[in-house]
Structures are given as C-alpha cells and as structure tokens.
Image (cartoon, rainbow, N blue to C red; front, side):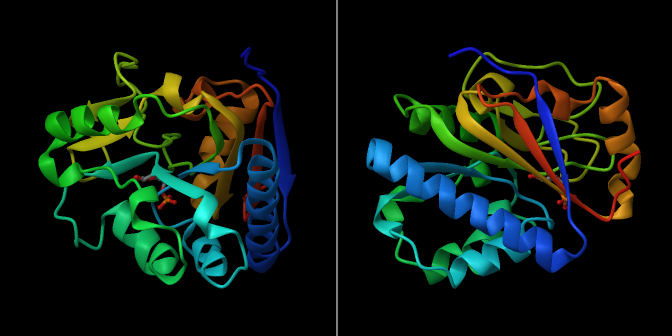
Length: 228
Ligand SMILES: O=C1O[C@H](COP(=O)(O)O)[C@@H](O)[C@H](O)[C@H]1O
C-alpha cells in the first residue's frame, strides 16, 4: 500500500466541537471497516488530549463485539499507575463498553521496555493493516513515543524507548513503520502549548509527527491553536 503525504488541517471552535467531530469520525471509520472486513482495528493515543473523546465513546452505541483496540505507546509503570495510557483508556471508555477483553490489547509496559516491546511485537504479529490510528502531539512535536532527536527504530512492530525527554524515561512505542500500516490517521491537537509544534509542522520542519503517513493522508483535528 503506498503512502500519501497529504496533511489535512481541521480547526474547531470549541472543545465540544472537536470532541464530537472526533467521535463521529471514529464511529464512521468503525462502520466502514466492519462493513468491509467484519472487524475494526483502532490504535489509541495516550496522554490527556483524547480522554474526553474516550468518555464520549463510553456512552456511544456501536457494535463493540467487532472492535479490536491497540495502543500507540505506553509508559513503563505499574499496570494501575495513573500515568499509564492503558489505564486512562480503560477508565474513560473501555471498562464501560462490551468490547471482549481478548480484543483489548494493552502494551505490557509493566514488563519493562525491552521485554514489553518484544511481547507487544508478538501480539501484533499477523494483525492486518490497522483501520484507524489516533495520535496526539507533544509540545516538542513528539507523537506516540517517537521523540525529536531520537533515532527512528523500525526493527520491530513495537520498540523500546530509552531516555524519553518526557517522563517516564522508559517507554514502549509502536514503530513508525507499523503505525503507518493503517488505512486512516487522525491527530488530536488541543491547547496553546502545542502552537510551536504545529507551526513547525506547517512550516515543513521535520518533527516526529511528520513521520506518520497513511494511504489516505493524515487528518489533524485542532482546537486552541492558530493555523497561520
Ligand atoms: O506522552 C505522551 O504524550 C503524547 C501527547 O500527550 P498529551 O497529554 O499532550 O495529549 C501522547 O500522544 C502519547 O500517547 C503519550 O504517551
């Protein structure tokens, strides 16, 4: 499948508007994938930005039995640590809907970055092209746990991250290559803190977020940043 470098920017006037638009996009992608493949493979962003969208999903009506959930990255902390991306997604959404537990694929980051990345690569083995990858954008331009200045490691589907500039230092991320093996990509970007990263991205400065592409290009949903 060939990648498409097109980036489409979408701005919204309120937090409610962007949340609703993201929710609609996710549910539409699910309907399309289930009609085509009989299943929907979604990869979740962590951090704080997507939490409100996940809370809306908790109340949505969907054919949950067909959903398969993955995470684009996680932090090497105990399973129930508040900074775990998997805990945030479960608390906000996944624990409230009928997705079979066997179809929720947390990154076993509690094993440490090397062992956890190996284990997640095994989990991803044989998994078809994702349908939708949701990503966030850090103040420094990072996405998933792909950080500026760190070598891009595409040696496996999931790779360990050492010395992350944003704590904790040890993390696991799906690799750039595997994240790009998706039909659609949606970035969620909110808050003035992301302005510099957005400006760099739009000026063509290579930030980690620009490593991500899909055959259908990339959609960036923004609120609270100025698109100049
Ligand atoms: O550390 C992370 O940061 C990014 C951005 O997080 P946010 O709190 O600014 O939304 C996130 O996308 C990534 O999954 C997470 O591990």
